[in-house]
Amino acid sequence: MEKKNEPQGMKRRKFLQKTSAFAATAIFLPVEGLELFGLNKAISQSSSIPTITLNNGIEMPMIGFGTNTLRDTIGVQSVSDAISVGYRLIDTAHIYGNEASVGEGIKQSGIDREELFVTSKLWVDDAGYESTKKAFQTSLDKLGLSYLDLYLIHRPRGDVKGTWKAMEELYEEGKIKAIGVSNFSPEQLEELMGYAKIKPAINQIETHVFFQQGNSYEYHKKSGIQMEAWSPFAAGRNDVFNNQVLADIGKKYGKSNAQVSLRWHYQRGIVAIPRSRQKAHMIENLDIFDFELSMSDMKAIAKLDLNITQFPEWE
Ligand SMILES: NC(=O)c1ccc[n+]([C@@H]2O[C@H](COP(=O)([O-])OP(=O)(O)OC[C@H]3O[C@@H](n4cnc5c(N)ncnc54)[C@H](OP(=O)(O)O)[C@@H]3O)[C@@H](O)[C@H]2O)c1
Image (cartoon, rainbow, N blue to C red):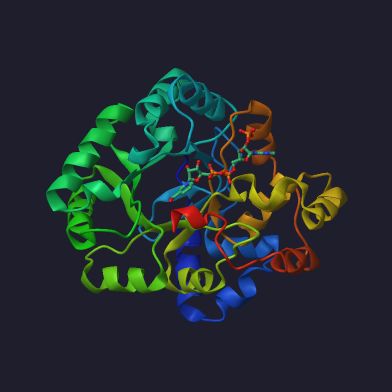
């Protein structure tokens, strides 16, 4: 990825320090205001996906490719297709059982490793200092990579303290560019930061139009920990792709419900990792940077919030 200038990231940090009212206003932020998030408008050469500067200075694309359930040949083909149409952030996890397929897809894409931002996650069975080091190496080997851009604790279970210490060491050794967590509440983040030497760069949590995560959203904006959306379409639940509010908004801009949803995440300053097996959908999901949701659009989408998970089976 192209190197971006420091000042935008600095602007974001200063801005975050200055205001605690930030989160309350952020959902209605117009495009010009996105620079205050550290969203760099300078676009990387190989794709047109804007990036955000994380709290350790590392740049991350604002839209990535989710790979849950994409295994074996479908996994290889999907990842290779996603990279060919412009995705640079690829999200996998040990528990998805597809790290080898993701690695093969990366290899088949022919893209330089340095152009990519690869995330994997430590599953709960591997929590603990020694087991984290081992599990990390297994993930790297399966992916066929020598480093990860981002490694996350998948769920706040087991020996989180030992896990985090191991991840901090791997980070300091240069084997991971940024470390973070997933599915942590603000309270669990605070607890971790009570003993952490290195602050998490990311918290990847469930968020979409039906679960907007009001409190957590505000916490992330204040803390400088970047929020990343898993299941940015609620995996299609609650009939999101036929939702009338999203359809009425999309009609004004010639955009689909999927595109309106992803644009909404982007204008909130949230990284999103939509999954698709279809190349046409992969392309559609990147085509969100040529329109802007108005304040009234953002308010209408805010009303879709059911404030409850759409995945109760995972609770
Ligand atoms: N950290 C965690 O605990 C956690 C949990 C869940 C997920 N994740 C991550 O988040 C990623 C995304 O979440 P997800 O996979 O649950 O679901 P998602 O991205 O919210 O939705 C995927 C579904 O949307 C459909 N879709 C995609 N683009 C579309 C479009 N333009 N129009 C219509 N339908 C479209 C896909 O079908 P087609 O294939 O037909 O396009 C698929 O059925 C995962 O893959 C994974 O990497 C992380």
